[in-house]
Image (cartoon, rainbow over all chains, first blue to last red):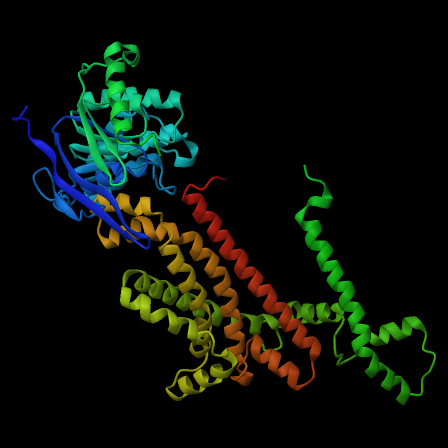
Length: 262
Length: 293
């Protein structure tokens, strides 16, 4: 596996927030390597630093210890190179823009040509099954469709790394299953590297090639599980013994981090 | 369909009617002493009720003119007087309106500019706001004549000094509203642009400006009313040059209370019209920005 280039490389990464109640250790001594084309899930209870780690990759938070590189450079440089697309917990669509204009937002900022913008909007909206909703405003769409639009927005420009922070956390189970399926399909089609934060064990196991189990106080990595599931994953793979075995290991990892005792 | 009782027109009509009834009541109370002295001098006693009421409501210089007297004065000075002469209320209203409009335009632009610099510059944020607030604690009536006199001495007369007084009053709500408006975008919306490595001006035009528009319209509504007050106050020291302010001043010199009330009515009409106009622009804008109908 060593010939596959690494996209994210963290060594002894620590991040401490200074608050009025004293320092909060959001991340402590995190070592992690994410290779190109991997689908990596971060799972753990609230406060385990999974979102913070994603934000550190994105240069939205500044680490206070250790090193982290993205595509071999600093996160700040990677951000300047527009190396990643970020999907937030909420769709964060601009309410005064139509869906197509929301998808166009990064393209406008990065200075893509008008004709190129059009082609990219059409392509990414098709990719997330939102064709025909170009002229709608966000409030006219359901929560699931809004989140799909925000994924389209992150895919519209050429970033090989997709950072997703609990993108389906606010959606119901049925919509979530559907979007998980679509996300896998998309990952397969585009070959992007995906970092995916979640609360849900089945979601993490279903989606990932690698599962990073984290625990809080201080936020740290307690286990890294390489999935043995095949790339091709129908929804009912979740009933197979292999799937349940991995899920059990994740659950054990979470328990080992004492996350259920508190 | 809603019943008449729930309609807005009915609600407003009821309030207006109540005000008119109370107004007529006060017109009797306040004008009575003068009427009694008139009767006393004429040695009249036992005036019939209708005569008494008619006299009370048709005094030449009543302390409080009755609503119909104001209405008649308003009608004759608006519709019957030649609008190019100082006899016409339209003539005065136009002078005031042009100063209001110009001052409001200056004030809004100045307010937006100050808000932009406050939001984008820490030093401005720390140093400017106290001065902006302090500027509004100075009574405008005290400095208005000075502004007029000072500008007069450098050759600026007429519209500009009045417009500047309007500006002085109307920039304030715009600064306060727009600072809040420019800071209104959620952290998530700002983070998003950060992930795109957007420049400060891109953040401004693509996020801060559109997000601040509801705040702009709210502060413009306050600002336009303040502008009108500023223009009228600015006209008080300029004397006979025209405008609703000078009309008010002339009315009080000559005890023409009816004229004063008619001018006040005109000022109220103007400010209502300006607010309706801003509301219309706001509706059009929010429609263009995809707000739910």
